[in-house]
Image (cartoon, rainbow, N blue to C red; front, top):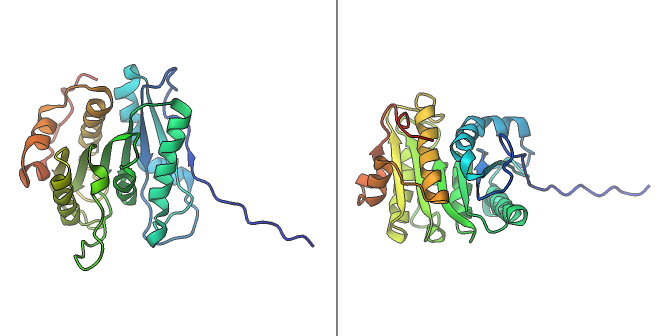
Amino acid sequence: MAQQATPVRTARLGRTLGPGPTAVNGAVLLLPGGQEESGRRPSPLLAAASVRALGRRLVRAGRAEQLAVHVVHYRYRGWNGSEEHLARDAAWAVDETVRRYGDVPVCLAGVDMGGRAALRAGGHEAVNSVVAIAPWLPEDDVAASPEPVKQLAGRRVLVVHGTNDARTDPELSFRYAARAKKANREVCRFEVHADGHGLRQYRDEVASLTADFMMGTLFGRAFSRPVQDALAAPPPLGLRMPLAAGFGKSLSW
């Protein structure tokens, strides 16, 4: 009896969120969370659900600019050590975006382990900006190889973290942002006080902050004053910028 070959897993881009633009001028790739170790295939429905609200906000903000927003569907749930599956799938997704749309600027926006994937894959030449929301980052052990930051040179980077996050340590994202700021001045980090990992209390504010950052990096719109201040301020001020309640209500898009 002939032995059947094991199907090769492939990453893929989900359909464009919202109405597909007729001519794409920029793209956002949404990177859902994951696990530290897992060989299981992710659920497409759960992955999309984790970033759908953010994606809808970005679609509305970028509709006039012909923005394409896709969810990246990974091959595996886990990062899986040196395999770095999520980061490799993120890099593949950027390649696929360039293949589909040509030379357009790309923003990687990830949550949880997807935040780590966005930061790792941010060195791709088509990526001009990275958003990491409540990113999962490993302990910054000086005896081992620290999480790399040099790939972020020349990109604008936004990190957002709840101060009461019990799943991913906000202090680790602060230390990562501080190291990244030494290699690249265009790094800022916002703290969402008293909110947890899912940032549910300030979900609208986080989505508006991400949209404001994305519109500035992809399409040259002026950043809101808080983002301008956070990018310009030296550490630690620009890396512990509080996200104000009601942020985004006065923004025009």
